[in-house]
Amino acid sequence: MPFNTISMIGLGYIGLPTAAVFASRRTQVIGVDIDQEAVDIINRGEIHIVEPELDMVVHAAVKEGYLRATTTPEPADAYLVAVPTPFHTDDNGQNHKADLKYIKAAAQALAPQLQAGNLVVLESTSPVGATEQMAGWLAEARPDLTFPQTHGEASDIRIAHCPERVLPGHVIRELVQNDRVIGGMTPKCAQVACELYQIVVEGECVPTTARTAEMAKLTENSFRDVNIAFANELSTIAHELEINVWELIELANRHPRVNILSPGAGVGGHCIAVDPWFIVDACPEQAQLIRTAREVNDAKPGWVLGRVSEALEVLHREAPDARRKDLTVACLGVAFKPDIDDLRESPALGVVEKVVALGGNTLVVEPNIHALPQALNAPNVQLAGLDEALSQADVVCVLVKHKPFIQRVADIKQHSNVIDAVGLLG
Ligand code: SAJ
Image (cartoon, rainbow, N blue to C red; front, side, top):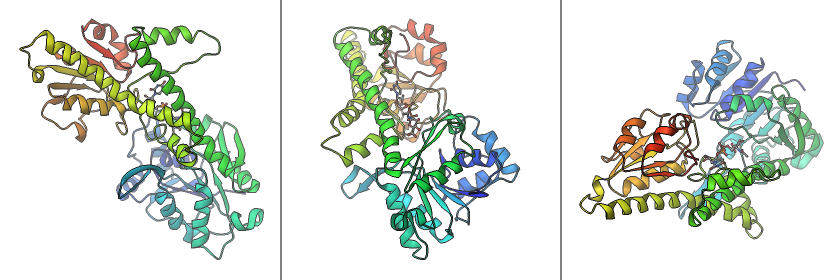
């Protein structure tokens, strides 16, 4: 079927690049977001998020008239939903269930525009069953139309799940090159959704069921989480045994069937530290390894902090009159991973916050930001350059392996008291 106009509901880290890439293929794209400011920025041909190359693609798409943003859905041939699926929060605080309220709101907002023959695709990372639930909300709002859950292949509306799987920092390239898993509520739904994605995707579009596609996405991120947990556990074991974990991994990885990932300050971001819990929540009895991996990775920032405390204790003992508040710790990196400016869900940021709380002075070196986040707004913490930090710090703690740190590794090595959570020094 022809897709003359598509509508992207949610213009965030996934929705905006996806909308822009479709628009760059000369498809009319109507982007929808509840954030008026984001809508205004996009309509000026600018962007409200940081992602390499995205500004150029959005600018060209808006200027050439293929991309337009609005706060209310308009008629389209296909609707793509890319809204957040955070943890559920109730009176007892946060739990590890997915909160589908944004999917429900998106479904209710687009439902009045639906016409027979339309396709609705859920892109948001979701627990198994969420696509069927979205179809239920659409059907509730539009009793005049038929849906796959009741009318199968004969339904007026086609519904599919096509999880996004792009790596932040490489989104524009991966949106086009990666294979896509396309789960239809019926085989016809999957086929129609494949036709849509083939407009932009150069990789293969592989059809399956909606439930399998939902689980495929959770599986990919759980696989990575479990493997990072192995590396993180290894780093604490190696420390106990007085072995250099980076050399150890380098040696083990020379085996043709071994490929150990890198230990770090913990696992951050909005995906890998969240998605495995949706599996654990659905199958708590069976998901033992997946749960343990989450716990191992969540414990890693605390372990790194413990090493900073130990180093300070030693200095304190060595120079009894140097009061703890006069000691300075330099923290290199606060982003959630190398070479990005994104501090959300960052394990490094968590470590820095606790280092600040230990007392003393903290110098934060983060080449990707110009001002410290609110969480680090304290009199004893400052954003600093690398040279200043290295000359003033009693303890240096490397938390993120940013390129500018790799370039200055020889200088960092000169410091006498470095805690290296990411293998910068080798
Ligand atoms: N990390 C390590 N050691 C490693 C690799 C990563 O400690 O060897 C840490 C990073 O520093 C970071 C966290 O893990 O804190 C996650 O980083 P990442 O680069 O592995 O992944 P994300 O969260 O940026 O993106 C992931 C990707 N998923 C997979 O690689 C399986 C991406 O393809 C997904 O689209 C994205 O999650 C998502 O949106 O779900």
